[in-house]
Image (cartoon, rainbow, N blue to C red):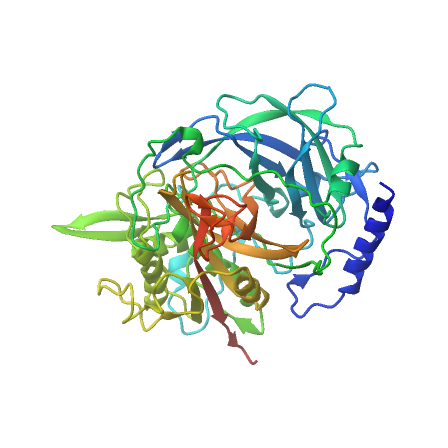
Amino acid sequence: MKQIPILLFALSLLHSISSIASSPDITYPPVNHTSILPITADRGAIRFEQVTFDLEIGTITNSDWGQFKVKPERLLDRKGKPLGAGFINVFLYPDSGTGAATPTWSVDNLLIVSPTADMTTTRTPTQHKYEPRAGTDHDNNRSSENERYTPVPPTPPASRQAERTIYFDLRPGEDGEGSVQQIRATILFSSQPLPTITDIAQFAAQFPSHVYPVRTTIVNAEGAGHVDGRTSPVSSTIPDTLSLGRPPQPVTPAPSLPDDLDFPIQVIQADQPNLDAGQNQCIPIAHANALQYLEDRYDNLPLAWRVPQLHIRGIGKIGSAGDVLIWEPEPPNSLVANIDSYGRRDDVHDLDTGGYTTFCGLIRGVFGYLADPVSGSLDATEFRHQGSSSLVLGDNADCDNGTVTMGGLTSQREGLFPTWEWIFDELAQGRAVTILFSWYDIDGDWKGGHSVRVYGAARLNNKHYILTLDDASQGDNFSNLATPRTQQWQVEDTGQPGLAGIPDGRLNMNGMSWEIDFALSYQAKPTLIIP
């Protein structure tokens, strides 16, 4: 234990050396001494949940999956002052009793971004102002809002602070079933990331533990077809507890610091906007969140770059004209509704219905929307991607079946599989990034997929992380209005579905049988306005 002060001093020095960033979005952890503070639930800053998954493959009730949530604005010190940016680690005990036991390191360095630390301008969806440019006829598209799709009254920005969320194993070491009512844990906040070594684990055990209630939550976030064209996941024949593979496993501390410990580095974009999604609408929502982020960032004088519609809820509603199926945006002034209409999902009648978006629907949705001379963007956008077997996607290339005009838009492949380095670089250049990932059961069979916007990437303790945002509870419920969800994932190729430990080139998420199949980068090309 005598090594702890030396270790923390060295860690602080390690961070202070890295003081210059090459991008306004790239930051290093704060340069100060490392302080470690215990966190309790007194101010409602933290929350433990047991996840019930309500997915196309069926309902997985009272799963082994836990969800740990943090409200950064409620993290205060003893004097009531905000703790600011830092990291949270959670150590779980095997039962909720008070007997001595060795805790498991269940949450590893959850990054907490200060509520005022976002590097780009954010605006809430109901506060977007529209000032049409001279010579355009798009103002009518944004002149009114459908009350069914728009929250009333507008939500103040302060109440939209995103919750930092991470999955963990609620029952480490066992595949259990049944409700979990409470758990015993030690929760530590630190200004620097804690190295996952034995000394730190033993140090954490000296802090008092507390019993926390475990609430239930339902997650139904999905809707992304596989890159190989599959869109209809089917139920597993194995037990429900293993239908999505096992949850993220606890950390196994190393005996000491590695000799090649890298400097920590991170790139963080704004974690807004994060709009409520309709059922299975993750792909259109990810596109809309990405495009609206670009407008928020670049549509500021002397630059101009915007999309004509409002960032409000909506759907691409399916209908027919005789024997011909048609999709129309409802309401017409909704950005996501217009994108959804080009993606052409099946069975979309309202916010509580709708099928998966196919992989090519992902491409046709955003390209078709941007190429539309009436409803599409007035400004140029360039795309590039990693993943899929397609070297080129878009107009006169793969996914062009002649049903959607894509106006010459294409995306060039820059890697067979998505990599953390590529995602980090794209974010650092101020581009928006979305990913498509799939989950598999314990046998390696595909059970569904999801698409999200990536708003951050970090390297901590030689581990790579990404930060994503989405709607955990899809449907007509405004669940994202007050506390939109953001998640942290450690990404590494830890094995292929059904064959853990045998790499396949794809990044696994939190060491699970969940893999990132595709990543798309959106580059805004704003117009320079010279008075």
